Image 1 (cartoon, one colour):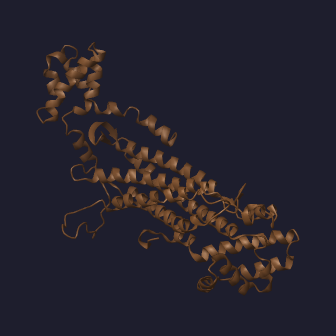
Image 2: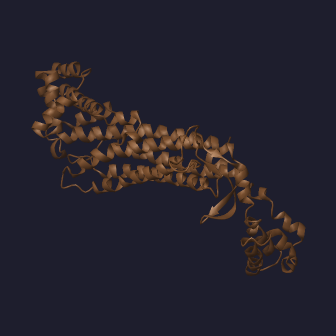
Image 3: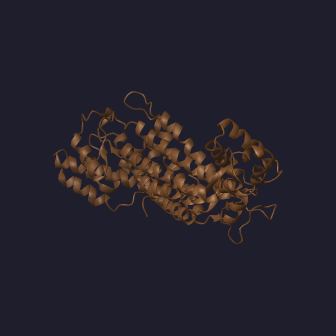
Length: 435
């Protein structure tokens, strides 16, 4: 976790204090059920809650014990016994460390998911607002980075809205995937603990029971979760790269907000660089990089090993903290994005009308020309314009072979910019629903 790319609420989910509090709640809920089943005294279960509910777990003390015993859960249980007293001997009855660690990890991922879902909701709201603001703002669509046909800037943002709506659905499913609880004991057989304890803890913590935990919760669940984060990061990068391209000097159709007093370069005072979206591209690379070790964690030895543990201690906090920060940063970029319709129009006009070539070609076929002839006629008039030698409509009007099929008025009609936007309302209704 890098403080520069972190937000406090997400960081708190991964703090030692939060972790130990969840550990306590798992142990205390399990002891409650064990007391109900008659395995431990009811007064012991009550005392555990009484002493531990408002206790402050001493992270330094737990760390000191761990340095001696070389086991984090035992260190915590030892410290808990210092707080609770003799009744602490009834804690962790029939349980194994993975019951606590895996269930806690899933709770942390659930909480992180809730923050990221809120992040996506904020991003969607910003995208929707700006999309409707520029619903009919003409701009050039590009394929292969080359001018193609007109679109609207609102459609660009509507595409991003639809993509992040899908990402929201994916994250909801990913949250459900990891929202499981395992309290099944050594090698997952429930030999020393009743399955009812697992069900009780799961209910108390808002989890589902893991059907077969084998001592650890299967890591295919986590692989899917981190892969989903990687997909969301890729969508962030896609939109960030679009903004970076649009901010290039030769394009300059949109750019990141540049605040008063901001400096773009230590050497060149004129610079206004797309630093936020470049940063988002880098953060997306990092989030995606966490998906592969999560997938490699799936293959554990037999009923369990801990080769996954060191990985998850890193990727759990790092992936969620980084993605949370990136989503919030992207929302701010979209919210304050500077958009230049006049420059968009200038770029639309830059190729002397070539953006209407398909309409002319199709019109020629409808007038009787073969597709091959129509393509050839349009292309031979387009290429001089591409080289800066004239205006497309003027050349078409002067081409006798073209005029055999179309009048000047018919040609002029095919250069209507608004023609390209007749389906914008229908697309917006698909994306946003009826107004």
